[in-house]
Length: 244
Image 1 (spheres, rainbow, N blue to C red):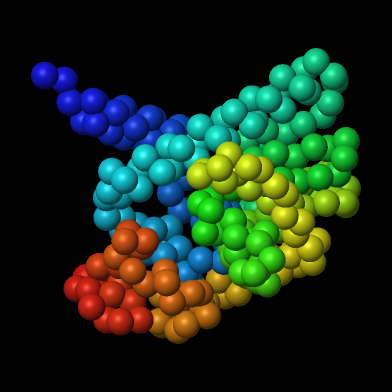
Image 2 (tube, rainbow, N blue to C red):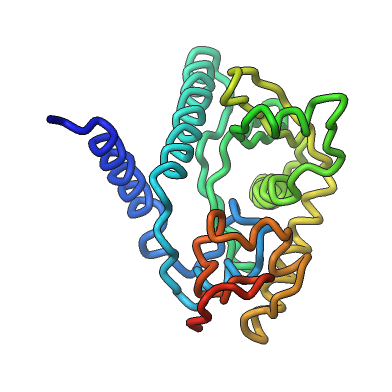
């Protein structure tokens, strides 16, 4: 009998591998813009030391695939809109910042509006922290903001044009609700500072374990979330096997 789960998981792995080869093979030394604001040791292991990350489990791969499909739908709608209306919209545009060794792919940039968006999927718990009144999260993930700031830095440099708006476009996976979260334009300068600091630290080698730098957040040091947890020696808790 056909095992649907096995077939689907294999399909997702193959899609993910094809995307990895297309985007990243031959560009392994570049830091990833999408990892802005994350643990600096992760950048070091992956892009400096060339350590192979631990495999991601099937459940997480399915979550990633769901995120990819949401991205594809929203970006597809905007691409169609641009074609029909003559709007200037960048979708999945590659960016490079050679002076800080950063490369990435922005989600959506509506040039006519001077607006840059990054698409994010989340569950209802995260949604409540972002938009609910009772559990309002005053400081959502810094990484999301720095990621946007990184893309904006590239665009303003390349186009010699100042952006008017940065925003995160959230899709609730549980309810299908969508909502924007504005991001302060000051995060462009914050992103510059983050990447410059990272490069400065790496000149001395792999940064020491230090909360606020490596990792940025305590929850990052968890074998469920970090695929360099083992090689890092378990991070803050020191429960892994240090291999490098």
